[in-house]
Length: 546
Image (cartoon, rainbow, N blue to C red; front, side):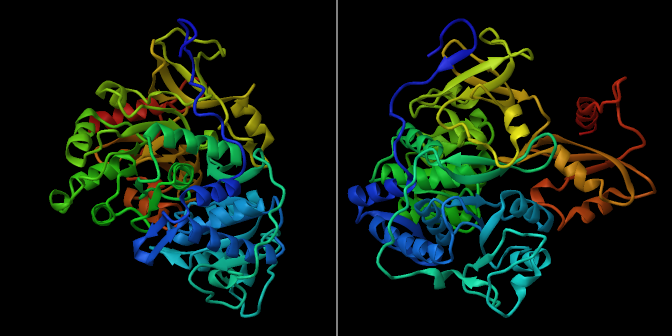
């Protein structure tokens, strides 16, 4: 509800804010849904009930405890979607360890920064995935990890990291095989934990371009999960297809923990998104719900196998990460049977949702807004002075509620700037209407959203300026039919250089989605009289050239 003609809204009071820890909620799931399917990963031949899942989680927890890991220690995970990711998520929560979610697209520089910032003590990693050689990257950062002798490890460059746990079996003596950690001994006594304890660090970025670790609690994550599950009307008879990545809140919270809260089965079609694989999984597993960003839904709708795929069991799910155009939404409803699809909006720092549309929302609400406030959340739109703006007026969107993070790990100044009096300042420009619906109309900062991935220009600019031939760089988003936006870079060079050479230099040095799709070599940037780069003028110039 809204409180006045000003842009301030309060969410409903049901369902209640959940009590307890993720480990306790796993026990609850076993009590309520024990013999129902919990986790399905067809490509790994995994099909476990809630009781079987808990047994494996507890065995892994005993193994992690046997390494001497204790409450508050950070355990990183660097892997694509797999059953081991889910087991690690629950086992670390069981022990009060802090799971550090690392983007599997990270390269060596980004990985080292994440491990050092979070003070990761143990790292669970895949050997490799696609073009990423994870053990090779770790060998650069931590040479002892490639040794033949057993750990614990030590390197002054990563002083906290003692254990590297390799999924699929150790390929070097210094690394521990994931399967060897499973301890069949009787359950260990559960440590005394509380709901406001830090349980997860998820990396985001800011205007400085340096990744920051949003620190989230049991309560943060369970609140979002229970609200999202209720918002989608999920129950134990549902089967949720999760093609979105686990390293992100979309997969880890709105996927895994939503199923924990509702008893729905979680179904992972593959290690990463592939439209054909997702369609086959939806058909064979008779899924009733589907998550994705708009580009994923579009890829499925336009796939050659779409017409012969039986999607009659689909009903609901969530689209997030970017807006859904009306034409696409109509196709999702009519052709994919997603009559109750919801739209979610938020950010990592709010665990992630702060608004959601209802399953019965009209087309305008689903395509032009991001819905209304989550239960127990407040939202407001403010001007530069921090004052509430009238309904319909654009300003910065802020949210406050049970999902707001504890803060950025070891970055108190950044926390104080982002969270003031409990309000998370999103940096997004929005309006609020008389019904409390929020419309995102732009960004206070120049963040680029490419296919649901947030890209921060300052970070890409920092990489580009490492090129010996470049004197300056300005990065901004330009429209893209497939991804919504893509990365464009204007650069000033010290010596002649071709745009293609700049793009080639970026490959292997940063995650693929951050690499500029277009590079323009220019003599000067449009500037203000005070020396600030005018990126809006650059965007306009590219628009005219398009």
